[in-house]
Image 1 (cartoon, helix red, strand yellow):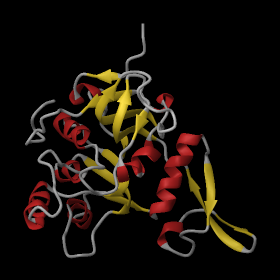
Image 2: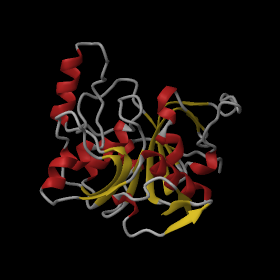
Image 3: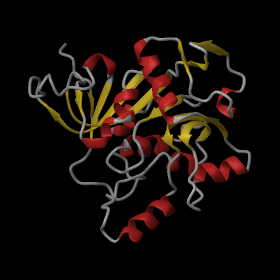
Image 4: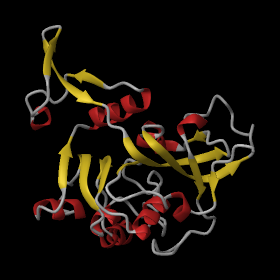
Length: 255
């Protein structure tokens, strides 16, 4: 049979994600970068005890509404924008491995609330080290040494060795059970191209898990993607789901 990795619905694409899974969540922090429909599908599935990795822990539904209203059209937030904070807010997350778990501007995000209540666990790591741990998992590299984090809480309990007279921390690859990512276009093989800043953690996380699911704006025919523009090759992607042309106004709406 011809290879076709395209799933009909987001709910079907995440249906076999189990409790206790580690999930890489692509995106950097804005609506155009998060795999919002996959996040919403996980919320509907009710899967729990998750460990999420990513740049930021995300916002609550009320906070997103406030942000949309406060921007007065300066930044356009689509109606279907949800962030990983939805899963945190619903109590589906047990641990976060984040570069920015909280904010420093007086807005208490759901993860910070639950962290202060002792209901979630946090592993804090610098943004570059997090990206490299994920990239190493995709590349099959077990661990690496980095000078970043020496003498801080990040280095606690980790091996430290000197290279060229400078201490380095041993960081291990971070391979997840599932990566959910956002791309712009795909073909049915799973080759991906990205748009703008969506290429950040999304491209890094592709292939850094046993299962990678890509949320895309469009699936094109084989051969339509310029090989020079393909960032993520098909072998790193197992499932592709197309975002609906008409945006849903509620994460609770199955799709």
